[in-house]
Image (cartoon, rainbow, N blue to C red; front, side, top):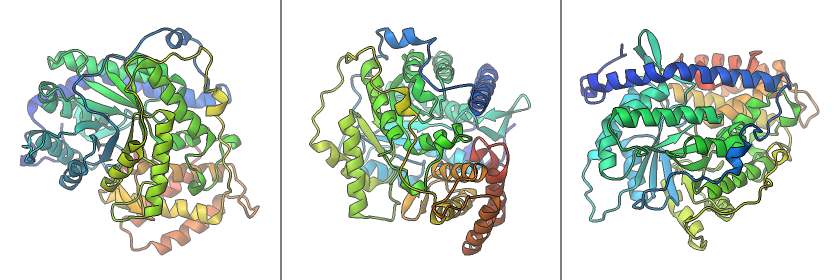
Length: 503
């Protein structure tokens, strides 16, 4: 069964394409559900102090053995600067004109997943891959698609009476329509795999890729993926994740925003993970530095590419600030100094900024695995050092509440990437804001005024911030969502699981 349907969608929602997507559901959905149950058990163990995160003893042999990911296609260009956005005519036009090495189409954090947005995105991708290059150059950026995570579902499509996993729908439609064309061009298909929490989930994606290659008669290993390391549990299993995907994986990427959210979420009941105002969380934090450093070391060891993520300071489309651009350039230069092979931005005008950062950096291409000592360079305690200078302030609390009102109002209006306070925000920023509020309320965290932040104070300030933003659409629905995700006893795993019901 499929939801609302328009005649012009027929080329995407064809019978053959939907039959292929249904085959993915029947083959993989039971395993997907098992993986989600595994996440719950791990979280319960962390909540009950029965699990301390560390490198896995059972997989030590994988970390000590000599192996590499599958060799990269020789014709691929560098991935120094890639630009992330949603599949719209304006974005794709600006992305191509920016001269970025790659374009990442985000069907997850940057997209409000209304039925129309999801299908229109697939149509834009279909048409973009078939349009003629009107320029006089052979320039063609690599195209990467980031499907939704395995925790989400697509409520408009059911298979055998059950809702289809959003990840299988996004991946399945795109690969069915475009994989053979991309293989012929020796340019993919390439994916960005989000929200992985352990190597079992990497095995899921690798099996999905292999099944698809066989089903669509694609060469083995033709589907390649960049895996985003954006959860605190995955950071301890990076080598195992690459090993599980060594025939399909070719890069690991950082995502600082989602990673901060993951830390707060996983250690929500721990005072050791109490962080100050969101504005005080910068890339200087010890745990963020250790995370990026270990990712680079892992990639160098296994001949994979290390890709730096979108900055915590990404400016909005309409905002230009020389000082802010200089800060971002400094951040990228620091990532390059760590050994990153490329960076991601979400603003076309940041492409030359990052190119400038690369200009004076001379690094040899990775041609052979680098030798590393057996002892760990990055220690578990480095990854778990969440101490950040700063305080929880009234302005910080109000900023989180205000951001939630503004972002969720826009999200319910169909816009997933939003300009707020001169920064480009997506759902990861909203996740940090609401998870901080939940943790501060439930642990009654002390503010700089020495007053504990409790339920009553939250409700008071929420009411005041709502009044200031009464012009926004869907305000009452957003108000209910904010109150639910902050005050509920059991932490809601993902904000989008609640808001999707209102969309």
